[in-house]
Structures are given as structure tokens and as C-alpha cells.
Length: 86
Image (cartoon, rainbow, N blue to C red; front, side, top):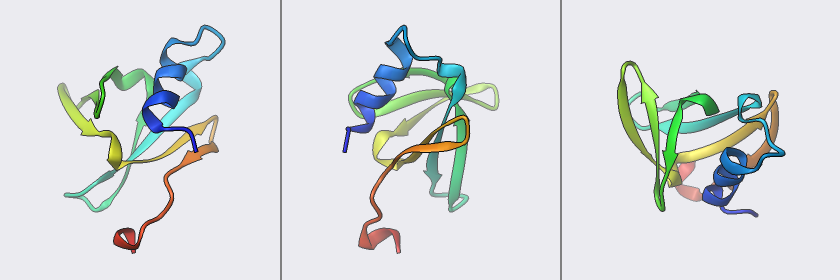
């Protein structure tokens, strides 16, 4: 499976990709549910985090909390479920 950081960087920088078609879903531990972020809300991607714009603020989301990536609603990447996920 392709590492999530590599996939997100490819979507962001590859001229053959259209980031507007992608959504990223991460686990919000406070709300205990997946949160959808459009790729346009991603400001930057670092070694272990993606910086997103959310509710008029910037928030660092650990990449290990990213669970899915979809392109036009089609699932293209999914983190394997672990025993900790239930």
C-alpha cells in the first residue's frame, strides 16, 4: 500500500492530478467520527502532519489519523483496520 504522505504529495504536486476532485477523511478523536476535508482545505503536508484550514483556523492533523482518500466519491486509498480501531 502506498504511504499516505506519498499519495497526498502526489495529488498536491503532480500536474496530471486535479486536487479539486479529492477528499480526505480523518478520525476526529473528540467527535469519534470521520471528518471529510476537501483537498483544497489542505494547506501543507509535512513528514507526519497535514495542516488544514478549518473553521477560520489552521489545524495540524497527524497523518496516522487519515483513514480514507476518495476521488469523486470513489475510494482510492484506505488505511487497514487495526485491532485498536475495533
